[in-house]
Amino acid sequence: MFMPRVKFHTLGCKVNQYETEAMEELFLHAGYDLAAEQESADVYVINTCTVTHASDAKSRQQIRKMKRENPNAIVAVVGCYAQVAPEVLEAMEGVDIVLGTKGRRRLPALVEAVKETGKQQIAVEDLNQESAFDTLQIETEQFLTRATIKIQEGCDMFCSYCIIPYARGHIASRPLASIVKEADGLAKKGFREIVLTGIHVASYGKDAHRAPGAPRQDLCDVIEAVAAIPDIDRIRLSSIEPRWVTPEKLQRLKATGKLCPHFHLSLQSGSDTILEKMNRHYTTAVYAQKIAEIRDVFPLAGITTDVIVGFPEEGEKEFLETMAFTEHIGFSRMHIFPYSKRQGTPAALFTGQVDPAVKKERAVRLGEQEERLRYAFMDRMIGHTLEVLTEEKPDTTGRYCGYSGNYQRVALLSQDHAKPATGVSEAKAVAVLPNRIYAVQILRREGDVLVGVPVER
Image 1 (cartoon, helix red, strand yellow):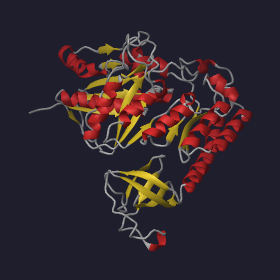
Image 2 (image 1 turned 90 degrees about the vertical axis):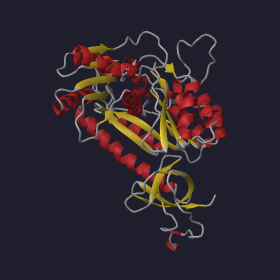
Image 3 (image 1 turned 30 degrees about the vertical axis):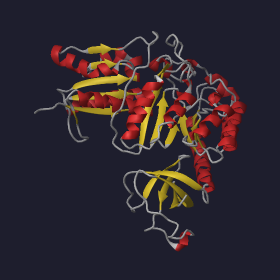
């Protein structure tokens, strides 16, 4: 029996990746097969990103590529770029469906509508209208180690450089019962770690409109509820807002015994002058205080962040403030982005736009610092014992690898690899299996990977 094939291409963040997997399942339930990378398809879906103009251009490039692969295929463009620029995509040759960031469960039906009528389908909702969480759910995953659950949509922060509030709309929180149901189902399938993600996860429960009588819940409530599922061993958070962190919340998280000690707190700049222009709602002093509070409760916590260099009116003085502040914090990893002017945001109209060559040079300088800080943090882990969740397949050397709770890549030396030179006797080393959590004594660093021996607890 003929089964039509669908192929997806995803740009952007982890939320987009989650939503793509959920849409894949919608098509599988509708009788489609997923086309392999080298195969053409009957339907192409581009899940777009619109953080920068470069993201928009990549989306358009992918549309043209997919249409060339099969000129007779139906091409659907969904996601953030479709939400903010539907008229551009509607006018683009080869685009059959334009679907924004709401109502993606309709996508298979929209494909059928194109088949039946031959007419282009435009389905972009007005995000200024309050709406409930647009639930997409994943029932299957390719790898049985770590699964992602989207718990929140939208953002009301309106940072001056960011288009996302216009692309994703107002805050909408997924009902807690729905989150627990999906997490429990994933646990029963064998997943050991759950990653809670969203557009602005720390705003969970801060919806402008709640159902009458609905209890006010926050991110701590979600973590505690998921942690109560017996077969879930670890919970990891995506990026959180620095101001969300308090000593009381950190104690609640520690008490679950399951939260990974890895916190991604986006900084964006280490200059208070630039933070104010960015409309980031905190100062470097507040940020540093939050990091201190985290380290007081989780001493070996991995602290990762995002930094934008070359924001309008960032001079050498402000950039050096960022260099000094990031050095002071001692991040375990930094993601560095040269500022990209985004039409539709206030920052695009700011004076003092920085020359591209200067932005590139500053990104290189901060990148050199990032590597030094990253390796320094890894070296500090030597001698410590970290909890590591192994992945399903060994690497090319036969060693199983995985991520520690504080988000360090670790290669495990099993009984077969342990040698007297490691300082850990073979009697203490244990056999290594996939999808298991081991206490691993860290012995050394090999580039970007820590190497250790799993030992008896």
